[in-house]
Length: 91
Image (tube, rainbow, N blue to C red; front, side, top):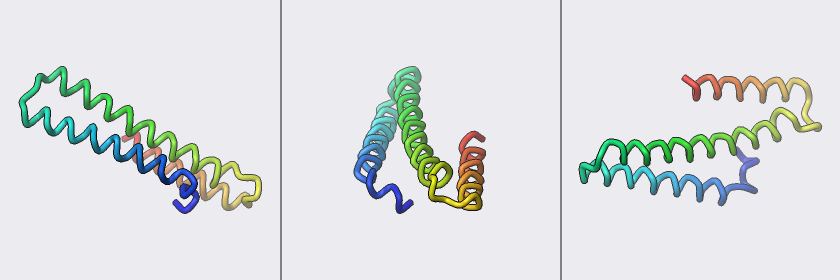
């Protein structure tokens, strides 16, 4: 993902926030917090991960599928990679 260098810090910050949320879930489980409260935080984590994935997908499309300087073969390869990842993600 060399093309993400320009957005590297932004992505790292998102990952760190997600890690913090997951640590919060762990603490809640250790403290035996209520199911509804734990599920609410887990839903927030899921949303954050989905946002991260959307950011990386957008970058992939711009750099490996829609870039005008790419050959058709390179675009096809980029599209195939994206399709494979989405299929795995949506399972």
